[in-house]
Structures are given as structure tokens and as C-alpha cells.
Length: 125
Image (spheres, rainbow, N blue to C red):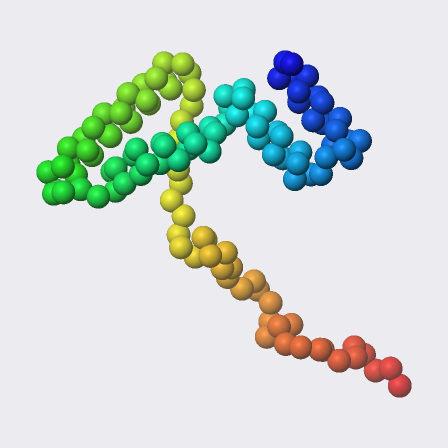
């Protein structure tokens, strides 16, 4: 059965409530693995085991510098490929730690506005 037909069948089974949303996600994942868009769990594990700690720990400064030079060359090569194909690229923008934490500076409110119940407004009696 072609991938498109399998996908259509999975969608229809979900619409007909023949499968649960969880079953739908599993079938869709399998479909994408079969299409080659996702790695199977076995492939992911072997990839992590092969290169898991590589690049994170160096025996000495010399090996670190060597790896840095190789990675710099690779970055230059990839940038040239992007430029060659007319694909724009930008460096990620650095953000401060306060932006990561979502902290916000107070707005121009007065202290009275920041306190609890303001009570009744105006004279009601």
C-alpha cells in the first residue's frame, strides 16, 4: 500500500473513531519512519551511542583546538553551500538570561494600582 494511501487510511480510522489519538500518533510515527522522515528508535539509539560523548570531552587543549578548527572549516563550508544555493542564513540572536526566564519590568503603573481591592469608587450614599 502506498504511503499516501496508508496515511489516508490512518486519518479515516481516526475520524471514524476506530483508533484513539494515541494510536493515531503511533501509526503516523511508523508511517513517517517507513517514509524515511524519522529515524526508528533503534537507529536513534545507535547514533547516540556512536557519537554521544564525542565533542563534549577532550583529552587535552590540543585535541580541543583541533576539533574547533575542523568545526570552523565545516561551518565555512556549509555557509558557502547555503550562499551558493541562495539560501539566507543568520546567526542566532543572543538573549539575556532575564529574557529566558520571562521576567518583565514593571510598567508605568502607580503603587495604588498595584495594591489589592480599591474599594468602592465614588460616593454611593
